[in-house]
Length: 152
Image 1 (cartoon, rainbow, N blue to C red):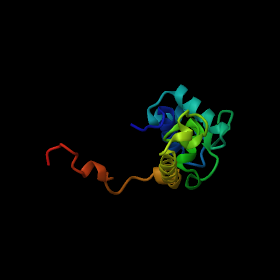
Image 2: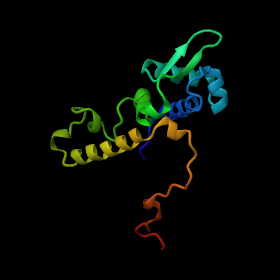
Image 3: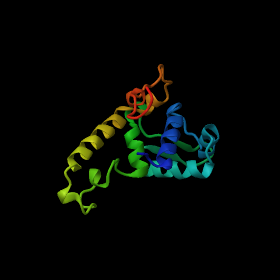
């Protein structure tokens, strides 16, 4: 199964929470209470995101964190990259030279193509869109196909 890290998942939840009120500074504790994560986890994520220029922080009694840009200008891909680093289905999709099979691999270019498609899809989804409810159910075509050997 292909997955992003739990911290990147939480990062998208934190950023989507901030995107609901993008102009207001919000404390880590306030965000944590709203989304049901520990304040320590949210604080760690926010510090990482601040270091990657996705959020800005303000100290003091009225301080906290807010988005550095409009939610419509921050993609889910940017959040994932800020937390996990480059998006890659395989090691060779993002960083050449890590795989001993790379020189003889006949499918590396295909993995790179798949990686580009996934990254593009993640770049097309903004935080603004993440704050909106989905109006219709998401249907995965592969789940509707009959599996070999499965009863029809």
